[in-house]
Image (cartoon, rainbow, N blue to C red; front, side, top):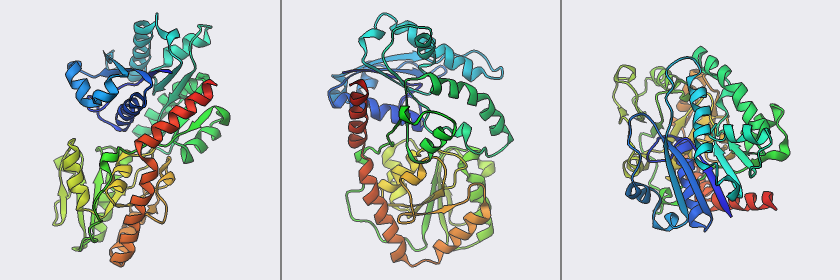
Length: 383
């Protein structure tokens, strides 16, 4: 079976949850013996990756079944909607690059808008293989955190719906994402539920450490309004407790940082070993997002034995429940403050049980299992 995997970036050449998902999916599909052609892009003035860099990112076993085509994402200026125009042009560049070979593929798996032009051509009558799309979190259809996000969402909704309606299949994280898609009127029979996965190398292989005293919390993510950093800061100011320890990982500006004892800001950390060191000394990941898909940071924290304090958005409830975490209302710093206060008053053994539950649950989401599910589903669709 020959798979054409289209994406607008892969780790480590582009950062983000979708980029990590793309890299892992390509790697594990290729390692399973499928012939995979991966098309990805590089942004700005960053050089295209060399063959040696690609081999380091994917490994020798995968590279024997993996063809990688590196392109540059087009830049069309800063006028409103430029990202949508650039995404359409990017999909057309891919189509023209592979035009003579498209019929040799059995299935096209695309991320975001990367198959937009392919779908358009198929709709016009061109003979193309089955085309699937995956937009990950569908945040544009979830509640926005502020007015700016509301405007961005309004621009994205129509083209996202067009791609979903006219693709042959839609890959969803399941849970709340699939419920959202069906409410939007998309046919349930074309929606394929496959959760995201976790690289087995992240999984804790030693006994859990005892719960820290004081309990140690952490946040990992971009400085982005929908991630809930503002609510965390408000809650910490309301608590005003010397019992709390909090680690922030991500590019949070100096001007936005709290200056008080027990709170540490580590900046951006892209090295997995450094991230693991921070997670291993923490007990609870705090991820109070306004909108999400199925966040990698939650999967990674669970793999290191952290309990999760989060919101019921996206597909988060597919991996978090009351056995391994707590839920708060998105955008509600009072709800977050109250829950943090309750956790600080909890018995350490009760917290340890939630930490253990995270490790037990995450074993179901190992990337080798997720890739196998994806391959079996594609084989079924082709039959």
